[in-house]
Amino acid sequence: MAHPLFVHVESRQWARLRLVKLVVAIVHNEDAGALVDALLAREYRATRLHSSGGFLKQSNATVMVGVDDDQVDLVLGLVNETCHPRTQIVNPMPPIMEPGEFFMPYPLEVEVGGATVFVLPVERFERL
Ligand code: 2BA
Image (cartoon, rainbow, N blue to C red):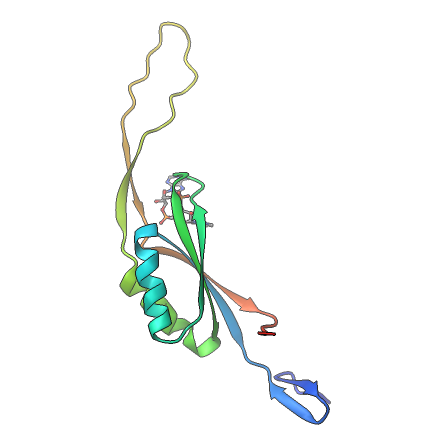
């Protein structure tokens, strides 16, 4: 019977199924370069996507890294070292006003990042 951690790849050849995770890190644009460089320096493979935040509607970066299970903490350590929290000022949208009403917009300060990270199980990982 097939072992759950092994897969039959060709006749009489069995390869160990690797337990792989996908680390998805949403980071500040200014930190993304340093994060990708740190990952590549340690020979991790990474993909950087251009993204934007739903709340601030400002550009940020999403970095995807496929790694073996036992490497996840090392990758999270690199995210922690390279991505720093910062505050950003948001100008709130004015509400719908009745005639004679007025709205005094107070800029709002929000803390963004260091990073928002999801770690997902990967069912199958192949480089063909
Ligand atoms: P944004 O959605 O543009 O959010 C930027 C920052 O604004 C957030 O920082 C948080 O401090 C604040 N914020 C977001 N939604 C808010 C709300 N409903 N009320 C008050 N303040 C709010 P972070 O939490 O560090 O998130 C940074 C970026 O990470 C987000 O940019 C978004 O692109 C992503 N993100 C955060 N949480 C997520 C989640 N649960 N799912 C998917 N993406 C997420």
